[in-house]
Image (cartoon, rainbow, N blue to C red; front, top):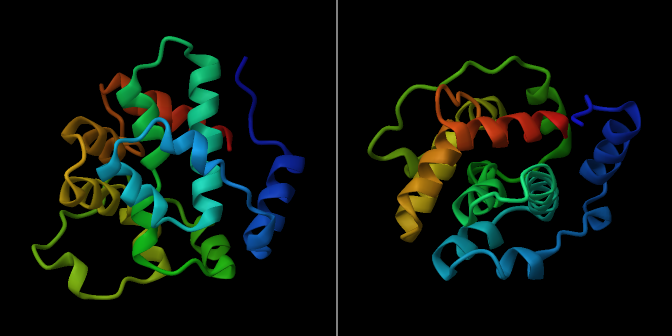
Length: 168
């Protein structure tokens, strides 16, 4: 049964955000599921984001034991676009208080050539992640699910990740 975010869960996440040494991503588990190109994108993520990604992927597997390999890989990479800005926990908390639109504007051709604010990363990380996956030679379907995970529409895989991510 799905449960809403708990106060205890939020406090744990806040502690991990403030103290990165508390993050313990299971990179070996992720490595066994991601091909080389996608693992390079995953490995570039902050450890706190990797830990969150593994929790989401494992919860997807728990709720959907028949989940496809592609869905699990997208779950592991769903927040990979956040790596375009260094992890500053106070910025993350502040940006997290802002309601995000269903889809940010399209990425510019030279999107990697400029810095992004914490708010821009909050709003556009699905697009950044999808672009990083494509640039690394990852699966186009994995990139598509990542790109749609906050605005899943009729994409069943993106809806699964969105629902599980909301539990975090």
